[in-house]
Amino acid sequence: MAEAKSLGVVGSGQMGSGIAQLGAMHGLHVWLLDTDPAALYRANKSISSSLQRFVSKGQISQAACTEALGRLEYTSNMDELRSADFIVEAIVESEDVKKKLFIELDKITKSSAILASNTSSISITRLASATSRPCQVIGMHFMNPPPIMKLVEIVRGADTSDETFHATKALAERFHKTIICSQDYSGFIVNRILMPMINEAFFTLYTGVATKEDIDTGMKLGTNHPMGPLELADFIGLDVCLSIMKVLHAGLGDSKYAPCPLLVQYVDAGRVGRKCGVGVYDYRKGSEPIKA
Ligand code: NAI
Image (tube, rainbow, N blue to C red):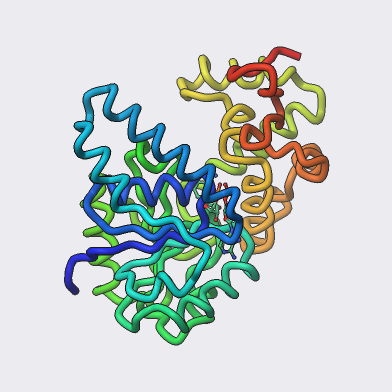
């Protein structure tokens, strides 16, 4: 398969904007699509400031930054993805919503295009089965934030072809990422292990074992994690964490994966983390967590 020259990214939230930025930084023409114009506006601002940070750190030149910005197109019109060689979707973590998108992408994209999902946990095989090209559907799971984190977890669905796998691996390597490969089971590798830890941190808070600060400090200094689990949950988004726990619970059928009621309650209250200004911690008065 020829090297991808263009990339369509669907969903311009924290992951989609980072993936689009990576594509543009590595020479691909990129269409970044979102149904919400405000999300596209935010993505434009965050990509520009992220690229500018790369320039200030001497990691890319001002000319490379300008060229990358010039390769990006922002759109709400699905038809513009028609000529993309490779699509990565990074929309909301809902199987129904993603399936609808895959049906639509299957109809409008060229027949050779690969359809990848950045899903954290949802079955690639089931998303693929919504299309007429399951051999060209694959999981390409970036870590947050995509321009910085070194890992891409590649997930092959039941029918993913070797050709699709190699093209996806080549794209990740072009982005200078390290690849790990997972079978298509709920949560794959990273979230199968990470999310139960985050959920357990919520149970530790919920049952009054310790304060949020002590839970996070314990895991940072006690296990050498760069962020505590509650702080990390706020960074990922509590809505995303809850969706992943539900997928693990349903897919692996064990009560140990049941989401903590406190996590459910925070999401019900709209406290979904940093992206809305409040989650376990309150970020509205500054950029660092405020002590309770
Ligand atoms: P987000 O909430 O920041 O962004 C999602 C974006 O998708 C929003 O801008 C929304 O307007 C848009 N959207 C929703 N439905 C759409 C549709 N049908 N068509 C076009 N745009 C649509 O979410 P985030 O955190 O970027 O997550 C996106 C995906 O990436 C999810 O599948 C999530 O599980 C996965 N992921 C998230 C990570 C994280 O740390 N937040 C890490 C790795 C993967």
